[in-house]
Image (cartoon, rainbow, N blue to C red; front, side, top):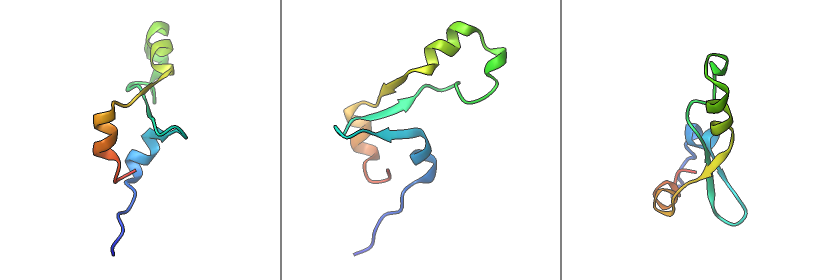
Length: 62
């Protein structure tokens, strides 16, 4: 039986924890952070959990 390859772009953005929850970083935190205000940078520094529906949808490619 054939196997599915991991989508490398998705792999770099998502993180699967031991419990099975999938975490994702906020958009806007990658580059050009010097021109963004400090409140925005603090807000996007933390990660958030992916919803169960999205995690189920992306399960095969991560």
